[in-house]
Length: 189
Image (tube, rainbow, N blue to C red; front, side, top):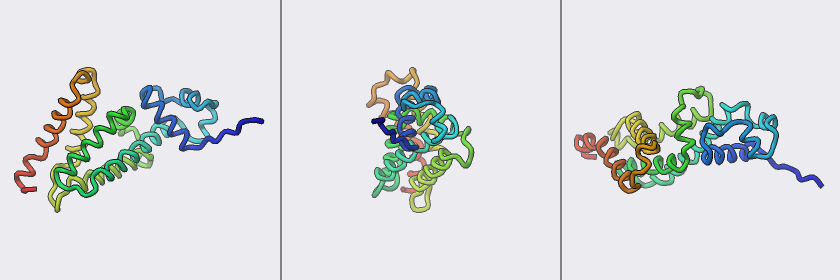
């Protein structure tokens, strides 16, 4: 009796995520994904139109996971506590999923109707809520996103990979608090 395959888009994307996390975004190609799924490359086109869509959907899937972790992690928090928790969750997630960092680095390549673009927009809305405390903004969402992503991109380079994890966390928190300190002093938040 022939074994029947149960392949669907979710399994394709889960395998794409695993492949990208383990081997890097550059390894996420249609032939490599087909090999990981033990199918022919042509069969992948039943689930994704091309590599660009595959990367967008994989990134969107990771963004959804990160978004949920952030929402769960900041429930009941506000002000600088929510801000710091948000930043810590994002940092931990991006360090664990380097492929998402690489996808975000190339975010400008995604069309405005892509799944990845839509998930980025949803995360920015969440960032805006986190940095807004009683109508006062702790910081611009641009500044927070740029600082967090910039720190993570630098942290993952060979220049900083030898840095002790605790030292890196202290430095990260110092950067974050320096960003909001002037606002906290001015508004009393």
